[in-house]
Image (tube, rainbow, N blue to C red):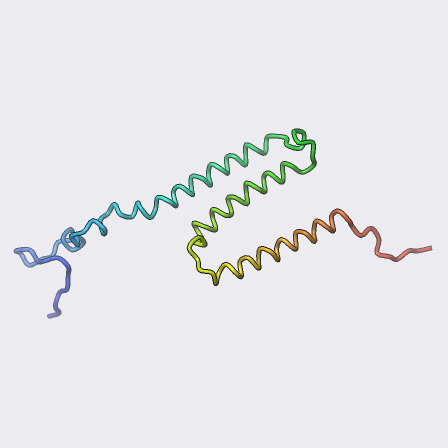
Length: 136
């Protein structure tokens, strides 16, 4: 017969009971210890929900009229969305605890993406109207 390896001693009847097998004599392995690790995720999840409600609420406000500028609703909405993306990246994708080796490519990607946005803005404000071909 194979030898039985458990952390709990056998009872008088020779069986190991489940409650005794999971008990290591320490509260570190208790059933309530997972709340310490889950709590930040719940807080971030609630914050994401709250800022989603804020985004929907902001969509009903005409910031173009308030600030006298064009596209302010889009800019404010993108600012809230950027904050939410940072929360998701930091907590749910675990980027807050990454080493420097992941941040260098991430920063390169960010600046490359920013450069593409700048090129799009330049094309928007200074479009090419013709292809240079004229017909007489």
